Length: 219
Image (cartoon, rainbow, N blue to C red; front, side, top):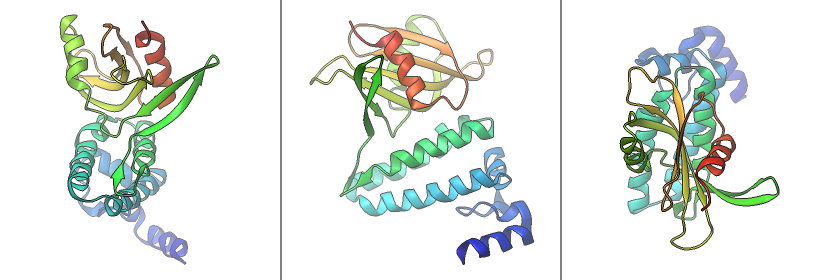
């Protein structure tokens, strides 16, 4: 019945009714307008709103306040980096997966065992894609490169021991008029590894992990 109502409403009012989490008649940004005219993005926007509300219900106190601030930052910083539907679909899918890690009073970053060439790595996808920006910018500044403006996604390749040399990789945009588009950037806690490479929006967490393992992991 819900599906039938959605189809009827979509037929009657076209693009203005596609997105469920906000009023498309007040869509003010290019991203909101794109969501309102793309059925897949509209469905993802609705799914994200549902996952976010479920996550809020699952946490309380300080964690709840942190999640609210984190979601606002994702909308204004990470999501706003996307210039096309493919990038937005990836950003939404990643965010939904991360929000679904919330439960039993707290939220976790998404963790998994990731196997590359027979070797298993402990991969974490961070909910706050911009928490490593200060460290990335220190590495970039040392090399007189443009600084990170914001990141769409962030991964952590952990060594599996306390106080170990974790390696981080971000899909980011730089604060530069010349260097437009996305870049993959990685560095580590202790050794001093660093790499920067041009990329496209929609890079998966595993592609970002592959880049980080290749250039910024190990002694």
